[in-house]
Length: 154
Image (cartoon, rainbow, N blue to C red):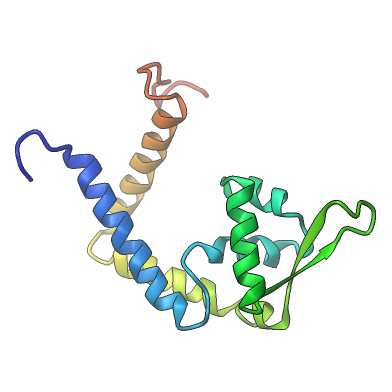
């Protein structure tokens, strides 16, 4: 790192890119693109939900889900049908191909997580999870410095 560089952002970006790349490599062997595992996970919990419901569950914008669902439909993982009560809405369903990945994809993501954290002790992992949670909370507050200390109720 050079003086003046944002060390935290540089490191977190590097780790994020490497995780995404490795997830893509591992998931791609099964016809799943990195990020699509979250959509599959929603549908394994409850099949036949709307793209908007998926977006809410995985905390992304609805157009992002719509594009991903289109790609996943083309690749045979999902199907889309009009809602029976409201023909303007669509519902997303797993295909048999998408259903067959129910055990495979979580095993891949667990393996990736295990590999990524393999050099950390259980205590260090817990500390990391806590720190990431706190960083997320700080960003939820818009970085305005008005963050609730961890010992105060939220």
